[in-house]
Image (cartoon, rainbow, N blue to C red; front, side, top):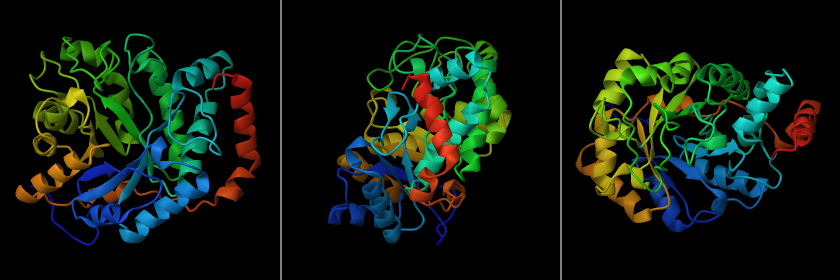
Length: 342
């Protein structure tokens, strides 16, 4: 089932850890050939030095692994303390438009990615490309704007900043989570709009920015007028629309399969459905039993590792102390403080 095993190949499962350092059980899990990614949360974080040490320990066990975090800014920022308190994307968008300083989006993208890269993180699952201001209960101010053309303009600069820091960007949540009130963490949202309606609004940022993105993350939403099943399991959405019609060439992540929006199947079934639909890597967060169910399902179904995921490894070689002493960093932090919206 897709691609062959090799020394440069990556497992197709991204999972999480419980603590701030590695246990014997963690090390054993990381060594499993099907584990190709670790996503870190606030519970894994104490300080910048500790997170850097944790990342170093993970990479010493396995080099062909992606370490990720949700460091969007605003209410979704897992690492704090020494890390810059980033504004929400809505606040960033509003500020840069108000001051006519759109280039500041580039600077914030660069700083976010640079601080993570200097700490051993490969990717932040950012930016949010959903079209929203106050429709969705879970997106809201995580989105740049409710105007897709503004999102394209602002997100492109943010992505370019991330790229300057050596980090690939991950657009989420394809094909758009901003059109429904329900939160896919706790429900199974349904969006009844047509494909043409989505083309005019939610899909615009994904289409315009597809060549700027290293990866996309699917939304656990069902669009019954396009396909009867959730996007994360939909061959129509992932293969026919995203890969063929939109010609997206990057990595496709499922959103966390532990979420309610991913349905009531077993975790192994969910993962196989996502892989068969065209996802390159699936996420299972904060669920060790579910993680092991996926490992077993991948083994049973002969899910092969993937060479293409390697493109997401961070290319930067940054020193934290040198970075924090840069005038550029100080200037960005000062502007963020002036915003007063963190």
